[in-house]
Image (tube, helix red, strand yellow):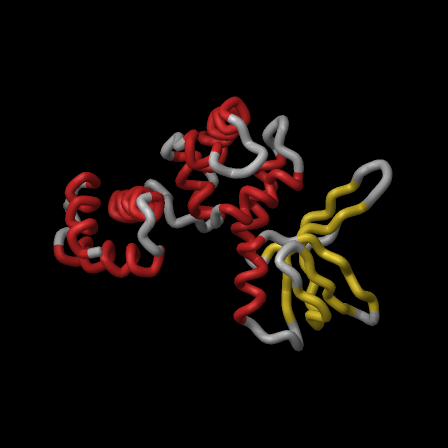
Length: 198
């Protein structure tokens, strides 16, 4: 079992990369989330966390820029009906935090919006993963961690506002400002105030 690879980035595409390590070029499948992160960094030395997927006729390597994304990927492929291709598609359509929030808030429509996922599969994802990822949230490093109401509140509000079409950086800036002013604000008030700011 491979844990991670560190090497030179030889080729970078939205769906896959080639990393040279120890004189060997490794072809690794990635999500758009990892692709975006890799674009920001240098090419001399990159590190990807790996998941090895073995089938009778082939061996596939999936790479992730951080451990949180790999954890979410492994949660997703544990759901019956979700293969590694679909899990990668989900993590290309949403960030690991957004997938996490959609599961915790039981947002079937958000999960269903991913190409190749129907209502039943979306419901199964929520049903099978809700308890599992809520318990492991702080260990996985996801911000929606029930440990502090303001972080849970902030994530719910952010998800709602991004779904309404606002950009994530603007949403986060507005929410930070509002929560600093009034940490005990309710979710509804927070969203309404943010809509006025945005």
